[in-house]
Length: 199
Image (cartoon, rainbow, N blue to C red; front, side, top):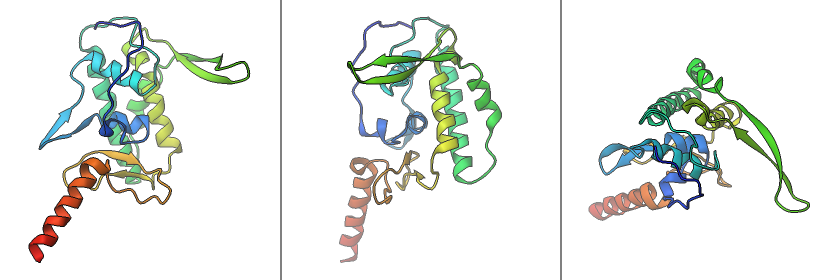
């Protein structure tokens, strides 16, 4: 995988951030495009770019792994994440073993940094010698979601064929769609057509 030292600006669509949580956005990288379930990742670089865009890491990997290794392990972790979120939402037993096997590779430490003379913040810095270590912040984000999130507010989009999830952080907690511009708009158009047929 080619690496880039400098930070890059990424184009983000409404669906890329529809989950309103990194772990849910991670699951949502597998989505319906047209009538086809589509993986938005096609390469190691796609995965690394997503991780940086979600601010789970500051940069693309400094190490290279066998081609496709990061993509394969990220897809495996994504499937674990999807199953865990579905189980937690259904109040079923969670498959913790596979997630914990990713978490045990996490090697990191905290660094205290300054934004300004008076503004301090703590940042977590992770090792990235292996693919699993590079994915560690993603696995930790998922673990935090499963342990801490209010799953009454974690929902699947009501779009007819949509597979996306979201964390409803709206004030009234009445969110129904992954995106008002996508599934919300489709629902409005369908409702309008149904009313027109009845009249």
